[in-house]
Image (cartoon, rainbow over the protein chains, first blue to last red):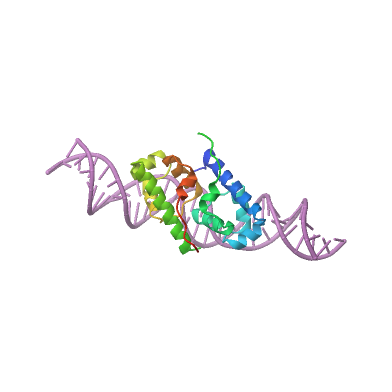
Length: 80
Length: 80
DNA sequence: TAATATGTAGGTTTTTTTACCTACAATATT
DNA sequence: AATATTGTAGGTAAAAAAACCTACATATTA
């Protein structure tokens, strides 16, 4: 199924949150990639909301950023 | 790559959380499935931690349960 | 200036999820 | 007692992510 517009937006919000946390720690894509089992080029796509990652990938990123998975969803949602 | 033990545990915790929220609202698997674009038999597997779902599936479930995605991660993590 | 690091983008093969369907035993409802 | 609902489990084809790799233009650093 094609990704719904609403979900695309959520992927983007999540990606931005990940990028924010990464920058906050002064990590480059390659540095973060070393900390978690996700390739740097894939993290890039995730941050841009271009990838519909699986749960384990999300968990790996949370681990690399040393945050609770829920912290990756710390954004407000628009009414629908 | 095979799913790491640590991530399996997180999938299980997330699944239990989803089941809790569903039961709280007195929804059956089939009722929840009607509210979000996820098949009831797949929700069953997700709740049991047997499925490494994608982000959009998570978002659909959050929509069906009428909660913020972060609420699906409302559990404590063990030290590692 | 030369070397290094960075974000970005495109591609490939293998593995996995998705999106169904079906069936069944146990429980609840009529 | 008969019917409907529920959780569970197994299987399928098609679509997608995973797990890499390479290249390049632009900073940044030595």
